[in-house]
Amino acid sequence: MQAFISETSLDQYRRACAWTASEVAKAASRGATDAIDQAFDDPTPWMRRALGYTQAINRTGDAVEASLYTRPDQSIVLKYGTGDGRQVRRPGDVGLARDCIYVPHWKNLQMTQGISRNQYGNVPGGVAARLAREAAGTRAKRRVAGRWGVYKGEVEVGGFRLMGYIARPGRDKAPLGKNGRMITVNLGRPRALLIAIDQDS
Image 1 (cartoon, helix red, strand yellow):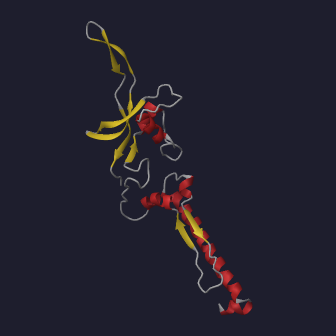
Image 2 (cartoon, one colour):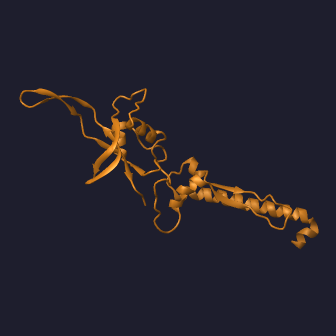
Image 3 (spheres, helix red, strand yellow):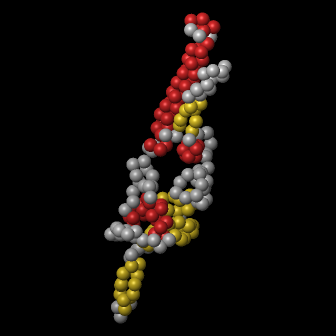
């Protein structure tokens, strides 16, 4: 410090310290962002905006401080990639709902709704909200041919009765018995789309 000040001034020394601290925080932010690509499969642009930094702006006192921080919403997701032990995901942390965690059944979503994973391997935006509206009785103005109806209720999965959003098969007339009496029947069985669980790890 004394060597630096002897060539310039105390004010310039403080500015140099502030610049150095800011550059270190900026480099740490970039390095940590690059590490997200290694720690998570197909991170979204939103995930890659998780980290930020503050510059050192106090150039008049003896203390110089710059910081690296994680944005609150993204920090909820990032916690699943930190630590040595298993991380427990609870309702309200992150996901499709705040009162429970919905796990997608991709085969049924594709078969009954024509929905596949987006480029990041997630449920496309707006899908959960549309299923909730349909289950509540609000139909879309433009109906998609071949798409099954949706309701919210219980369905048996692996021998357990679970709550979730379920696709309802279409119905049509079919003959019954020897006399050929026509009755309305389901053209398939209900299919689970999103299943509610208490927590995930």
